[in-house]
Length: 77
Ligand code: SF4
Image 1 (tube, rainbow, N blue to C red):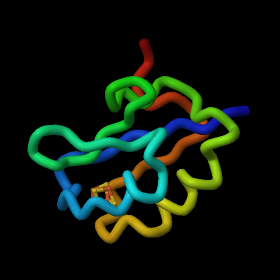
Image 2 (tube, rainbow, N blue to C red; image 1 turned 180 degrees about the horizontal axis):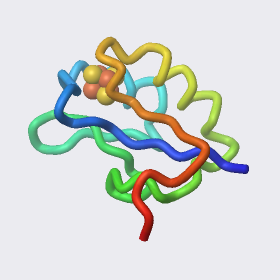
Image 3 (cartoon, rainbow, N blue to C red; image 1 turned 135 degrees about the horizontal axis):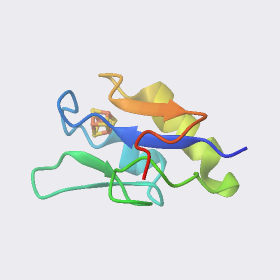
């Protein structure tokens, strides 16, 4: 079972940590706020297994706990 991720942009402080840890999964918008590349931050696309280790690291290192992880999709299509 894949995990799902999304960023809470209300609390993200654009610190740049998550994209450094997991550049395949997290990128930044024009304001520097992080979003999930996999599905434009919808949280509906399972994280590919090969990126999970990087995502866990990003999750643990986010200073504002803005990275969300879940066993189920965040937004039902
Ligand atoms: Fe935002 Fe957290 Fe990523 Fe920093 S690590 S850019 S606060 S989501």
